[in-house]
Length: 189
Image 1 (spheres, rainbow, N blue to C red):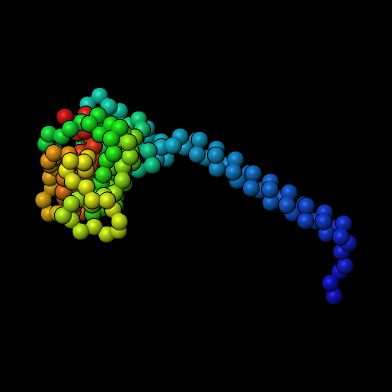
Image 2 (spheres, helix red, strand yellow):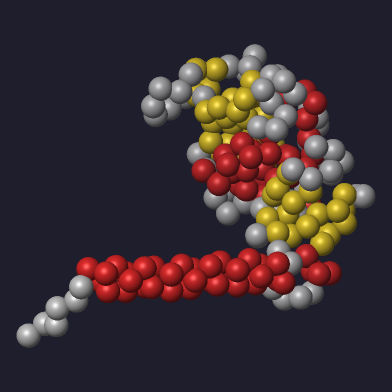
């Protein structure tokens, strides 16, 4: 047989349980913040030398598996990308203008989007005239600022009019995109 509890006692028990749960949550939140602060945002190794890289006068920091410099972030640092010499227009060319992108690799597309959205008026998916593209992407030509990222067996970066073609294997394509970004941002010559 269950013991009868008055409404007053039941209400006090409920309030006490809420206070205990609240205190536990506050303690967990404080400990989480302290843990992150003491870790310092590095990889937790405590070796800050491996978290920094200076290249061509630019200092990169390795944070959350990305190489960051200012507001820009890259999967790879300049020493990890292949050398593909090509003349490209610099980033100021994209400033304040819409930029269109066609990509067969989502990671490469995200890398371009995250870095060039700060420079271009907007970055949006599009379809190059003559290609079959899914969805309702607008059809654009090389008279528009256009970056085409394709997975192929040959690695290359080329520019024809306002189109930049970044082509490479699935394993190399993000490295090639980073190489392109380093070149247009004048990090690599």
